[in-house]
Image: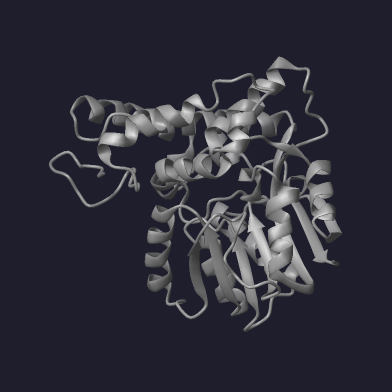
Amino acid sequence: MRYPNAEKKTDVPIIGTRISDEDVQTTVDRYSNRFVTKIEEPVQRLQDAAQLSAEYYALATDFYLYGWGRLFHFAMRKKGESLKDSLLRYEKLLVEKLQLKEGEKCLDIGCGVGGPMINIAKQSNAVITGINNCSYQIQKGNQFIVEEGVEKNCSFLNCNWMDIPLESESFDKAYAIDATCHAADKRKQLFTEINRLLKPGALFANYEWVMTEKFNPSSPEHQNIKQKIELGNGIPNLNYANDVWKALEDAGFEIIECKDMARECDKETPWYLPLKGELFSLKQFRTSPMGRFLLGNTLRLLEVLHIVPRGTAQVHRVLETAAEGLVKGGEKDIFTPMLFFLAKKVR
C-alpha cells in the first residue's frame, strides 16, 4: 500500500501492513467493533488481546513511523529539550536502572520495530531479543537493524508473549516500554512468563500505561477518555498502578522502585505536548492537530481517487481518537503512559 505524490505512486508506504489492500476496510471495521460494548465490560477484548494487538499494529505501524519515527513511546521532557533527545534520555535511564552490561542477554517485551532496542544495544552492548507478534513490524525492524549495523546485538522473535518458546532462566535482564498495557492478564501469564525466562535475582524494568488515582470510574467524561485511549491504542483494558504492582508481586517479583515519570516533565513540556501541538515546531508538525487534520483530509481524497485502499482514512480516525484521549487524559491527570517499575525476581 503506497502513498503517492501528485504525479505518480512512490515506494514510500503510508500504511504498509501484512493485510492485503482489499482487507483493510474489513480489518479496521472488525477492530473498531471490538470496542462497541459497554465501557465497563471489555470481556471479549481481554479474550482476544493478542489478535487485537496484532491487528492494531498491522494497521497503525506506518502511521507511527510517519509521525513519530522509530521510537513508539513518550518520555519525560525538560524545558528546551527536543522530543528526540528526551526519548533517548528515557531509554538511557533504562540502561542505568537495569545496570545493563556488555554481553548480557536481555529481553525487550513488545519491542515494536526495534527503535529503542537498537538504541539500548548501542548504549550497553548487551545482546537483546525483541518479542513481537506483528510480522510487519518485525520486517521493518530487521531492515533497521541492518541499517544501524547491530545484527550481532539485536534480534526479533515472532511469538505470543504469553508463551515465549525460550529456555527458562536464560536471560540476565528484561524491560518493556509502553507495551504490557496490551496484555490481557499480566499476573497469570505475561509477568509470570517474563519471570520464568529470567535468572534468579534478575531485574525487570517496565514503563506502564495506567489510569491514575484521579480517575473516577463513576464519571462519564473520565470513562469516555479511557475508552478513547483504549480504542485508539489497541488496549483491551487499562489498569491502575496497584493492579500492576500486585501482578508483579504475584508473578514472583519484588518491587524495588515505582514512580510516575510524568511528574518529572517540566510544566511547559508535558509528555502529551507533541500531540497537543508545539508552537513554532516544524519538526513536530506531523503529530500536531493541524498536521493530523491535513493528513486525514488527504487520505479521504486519496480514497475517493482509489489511490489508497478503502478504510485507510478510518485507520487514521482511530489514531486521531487516540490523540484526543491521550491529551485529555494527560491534561486532567487521570492517565499516565510512564509509570516506571523496577523489579527483581525473588522466586
